Length: 200
Image 1: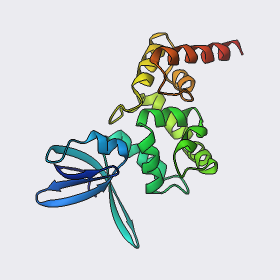
Image 2: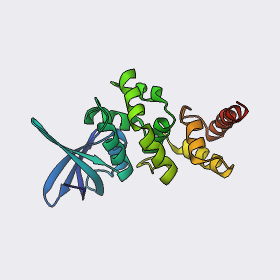
Image 3: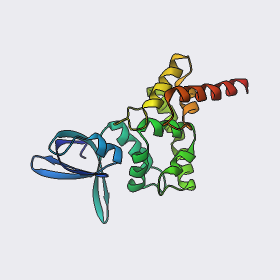
């Protein structure tokens, strides 16, 4: 099995990066986020890979971070979710936001990805929630390969942890919020949700 490729970017486009390793070009299908994270053509980069073998196709998938590859592995383990759907989700979600949404059971977040219906989104949460929640509690949120939409969430998460909330409590409070909101607004809304839960 090929664990990773280290070489020169010879070609890239959204969803595809070709890495030249010793004169051999490896075409890796990627999420939009990984394609954005790797360097420009002719620069050195490393992609963590996963190969799938089917009767009619052998495909190589590349990821800018092990955490994103782990999310990919989890997604394709879900019944009815193939590599194409997994990459579509990871193009919309950084690994940290993916973990937050699954751990909180917020399946509606995944229906925003093109091609992911309600039933598939519910199945993702149902089959992965316990696994992801244990990972979040044990190791914290995985590092994202590129912070396209997770920066404000990270700041809000850190603030809630400083205030004494557990990783699980903070993750659940933040999961359904819009990551585009300013970190101060995310913190305010999360504290409001946590306060109502304590009163309840």
